Length: 104
Image 1 (tube, helix red, strand yellow):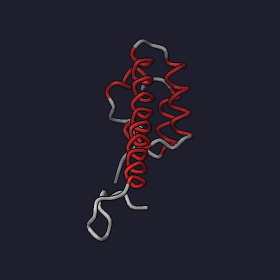
Image 2: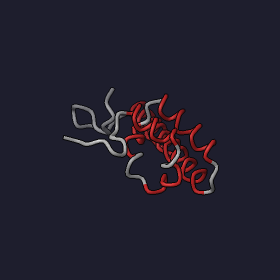
Image 3: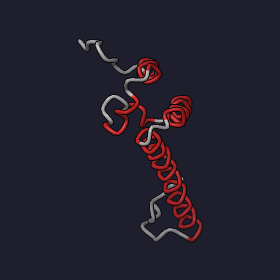
């Protein structure tokens, strides 16, 4: 499936290709909005001390293998969660260095 607006002959793509491209753009926008909503919810819950809710979303994100999880160790908005043993356990399960571990 081509997402280029030009066909191999250099002509402008037909209406079918345009609608496919528009649908792809919509799908990408929806997916990006979902990612932003998830991380924003975690930040909000962590920021107001609703750790149970924050960890519930973090666990779901881990199960869904969301790529944003690789930033757990450096995201300052997650600082309120770092002292919780669940945070260290989650970092370990993801495979990130835990506090006190050494990278060689």
